[in-house]
Length: 314
Image (tube, rainbow, N blue to C red):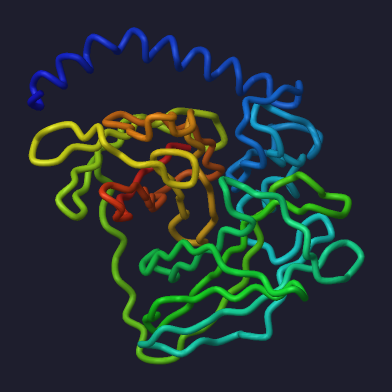
């Protein structure tokens, strides 16, 4: 199938897409009414203050923590080291530049003790992210935990500058058990820091020979949908391999303050293990302005990370 044929098919599906969007709106409106769809523990921030009044309420994705009010909005951005009695702790305020390094941390629970019980979230007990203040240098890792609750994240070489690291997890014990959290801290990497300008907003980008196109308009604090299409050499790609239970993982960071959001996939990987070329995500980005998106997908056993800038309306 060439691109023209694919686009013709895509146009014919627009009516179906509109219907899917309506269903999505209804499902999101039911947030806090209970129920589940099997995507347990999926919460990475981005919820607005109106998302719900109870952190224990369900919205069709079990374990999603919405919180309430201004505190919930701030916490959902992932910019705090503490939320609901859980705290991200580390003795490392700085890291070396230019060579692989390790970041060690613990998460303490409401009882003040190191938490050692975590529930899997997209197959992992801990998702760890690092990004520089100019939104470059993105890393997404799945560190290992020692018996005492100490996590060690093996970071690739870092460039000098101010960085923020995030721990995304679902507590398996304590008052927040089953509710996803994103906590973060800042670290400094010594050396001459030359910040790169944020690339302009664009609908598509290329990585490792693959073209990734993102369609959809998001408004701050309002649930919306994005459609991602993957092609190669002008042809749609339909052999995406499962990665973290889905065919792509989409993370976003807000320009200026590094607020964090995870754009949730609409479906899990299918038993046949082949996905694409179109992938649907839903998102609620809390702030207007530019967000840097990082889409991770896998083909032929290789993980690719596509980057592009998306402007969210106020």
